Length: 375
Length: 130
Image (cartoon, rainbow over all chains, first blue to last red; front, side, top):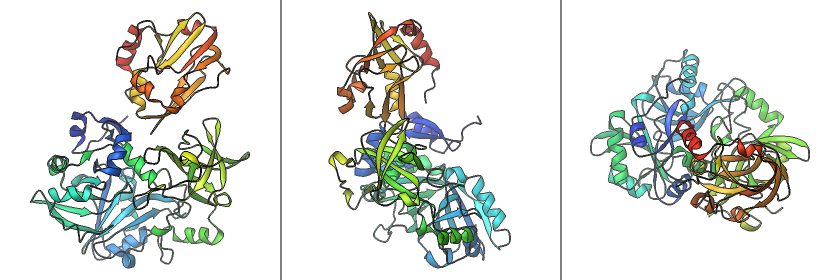
């Protein structure tokens, strides 16, 4: 195995006893202590995540927006105001997904956050497919530190280190700010946990200093395990699980990031799929009992195989197992009774609307006792 | 945590003791630590039959599932039923109150081939920390 890549914070995590695991070619902290407790930190306090492994691309030049609109499913020209952030997909010509990204529209450039797993493929795809546009694609992944501060107390902690005007920084907006008086930072009100929070982008030399200042202000370092549980509770898809090069954005229910009124790579295939009827749908599953249907478990009705689990976890916040599954469309009505083959045993599941957890309505009551589906 | 001298250990981090032909089976502190936060123990039915290497039960943590393998051929004589409602003894006392099941063995040779404590602790030095 090739040597794992590190982030400017890898040594900091290791020195403080984080359990490090290989993730997308990087050595990353999966948990500092208890993943259960770290989920609680996200939901009730403020968690710090090292996201340096994720990639960042910058598009500049006079035709940067047209170039982005050719590659991305979102309508970059018309549906992203300056200072705003929108979700988008990079699609194959067949409409399946190469990666999912966030697009930050600055006055003179586009800042695109990509997944760690896309750090090789995405820049190459952008370069290949924007060659005919007057624009420059720059991979700034190694030139930036990316840190997330997530949780209800994030908005109390951030002002201790950052001069950003939080009253002006709305959800899915970003602005430049200074951290610790002098560090040029891009701050966005985004995240991947279902809580209020921020993501910070700044130069790598300052990573440890900013991280420690956030810790001193009350941010608690957490591992990627808790982040994955939180995003699942919030019903947020993860590339490589809910979507990939064999699953389309429509099947994954990502319509909000797809504008089929414009042309982009994959648009024709997606329009054809929309018109013919989307054959599979991503759904949430409520699970009877406490066994967890995990990724790859088959979904059945009787002896008929109708889909598979894309992500499954025990939800500490809801105190019950939750799962997402890609299921044939004729079986996805809310409350539809299905079964999951959990390592050889049948477990009753029901289609449940997502998100499983929302910070606005907190715990969602589920019919039946103890949060389980009524059989 | 001190591991009992009189137990035998497997490479997959089960421990077992033998009393006559009844084998008591659990998992080690190492297994518990590496599973992370345990949320559910799926115990087998009393009376069910197992062969060596069969999955005897599953331990679910937030992010993973650990399978517990039977080291011997036999029949489940008892299970630690309280764990189904409260798995915390597994963490607090994996070699005592956190025992998983008792298996009435029809052939105890699988037990004899398990490691003693010294061999297991040597095995831990090279075990995959993942």
